[in-house]
Image (cartoon, rainbow, N blue to C red):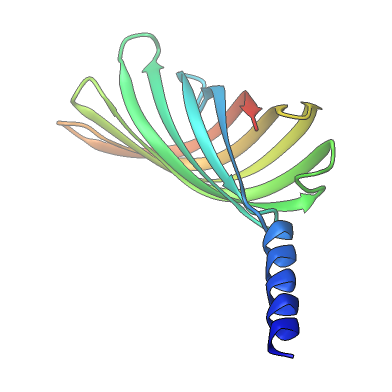
Length: 157
């Protein structure tokens, strides 16, 4: 009886673990987080189906005059579709932090809408629109403004 109970518990545990197995995937992207702040980046996403956490590293330029490096983190929640469907839509929130030429720091909290379409089993394309508030702090002054954003990229699962 103990063996049967152990086998049943083990099989239930394995089947539930298989259903909830998270997916970790890498991606590359191009972005414009205001009309003047553009760049490229790489990201890693930890996706459990009911939510996803994304971490990214970015290289950006403001009007071609500065070089900035930074990172971002975002939490995403599915509105439609799932990790097994061809397409899905996610909403979320995140924050970007970057430093330009050692003198200008930009912090940009934002909300986002993300659409993803799977082109092949291990390959998908995505587009993301966001709106946030960019807070700039330089050696001389601090300023903030509303900042729309756009990202397009590829995910490799």
